[in-house]
Amino acid sequence: MRTADRLTKIPPYLFMTLRNKINEARARGVDVISLAIGDPVDPTPQRVIDRLCEAAQDPANHRYPTDEEWGMLAFREAVARWYGRRLGVTLDPRKEVVALIGSKEGCHHFALGVIDPGDLVLVTDPGYPGYRPSIWFAGAEPYAVPMREANNYLVDFSEIPSDVAKRARAFYLNYPNNPTGAVATRAFLDDLAAFARDNDIVVCYDNPYAELVFGVERLSFLAATGAREVGVELNSLSKPYNMTGWRIGMACGNPDVVKAIATSKANTDSGVFNAVQYAGIEALDHCDDFIGHMIEVYRRRREKTLAVLSDLGWPGEAPPGTFYLWVRVPEGYTSATFCEFLFERCAVVAAPGAAYGQFGEGYVRFSLTVEDARLDEALQRMRGQLPRQKF
Image 1 (cartoon, rainbow, N blue to C red):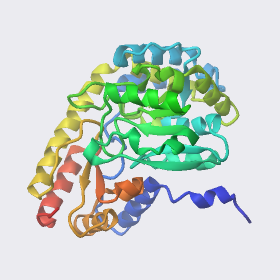
Image 2 (tube, one colour):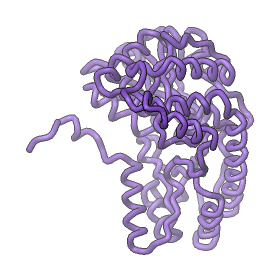
Image 3 (cartoon, rainbow, N blue to C red):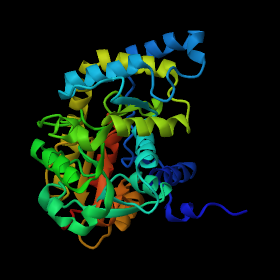
Image 4 (cartoon, rainbow, N blue to C red):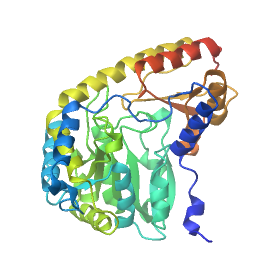
């Protein structure tokens, strides 16, 4: 039996690898605490759950989803209201919004709708591991664009060779950034739109952490000058409303690109279950306070984690966005060997920076999405088992 050659380019998915490692250790009786995966354990707002249950009782919602390739108009209208209220962006829900089965799916259908075999596609490094497989599935080749700590992990467009920029078809990037926690500025987003326009590049701006910022402005790429002419923004209900398993998000922006995503979806999936879309409307329209609550939860967890890391010798401050901490590994370690050391000493799992790209080597990522008691236990183990580190 022969499988497709394209699969040979795709490494094991980081988070499945981590889950397997965790499950194997737990099967041996090890009390593993994972700080590796960005999957909130705090519950979805109750009113969202109630709306799902109510909608699921209606037999009309048991059929194929309404407007299956685009998503329910009522959901797209809720997205437009949310973007206007939270991010200051006006959207036409009929032409500029398509519902997604999570923003990860949007990354894939963007590639299938926009990218041709043989194209060159820019992708930030370090960056979310899901971008490259989408590029490979489209038959294209990724080109790593470094994000450096010295530049606050904002892309320096002058580092992209002019011949590469002219060849590139698309650009995947993400702020607030996974894994670094960096946040874009308005000036940077204006520069991004100008760079894309000057080089005829289509932007896929992945923004599922838009709400998770600390002391800085919430921003949408679509608010940048000329952004809607050059690309789309992906977003999701997963992170702001603790709905990772519900699989609902949206792609917004350039009507031609949104239509291309919808066309690809129409020939791939049947859309989001209507009851989940109704629950999504409830979240978007009525759960702003919940977002504020979760930001305070993550702020508290950040502060206690940074205090322990500081006591153990780690330098640096909390990044302005996401629920991650991106920190250097101590002297004498790679990102992988330090994660192994942390696992063996403390039964605590972190994500190795090298899994996010070559420029992620030398760092690890801690996720703050575990229960407070489990985070406290993980930090206590680190205090008790790790010597003061050198950097």
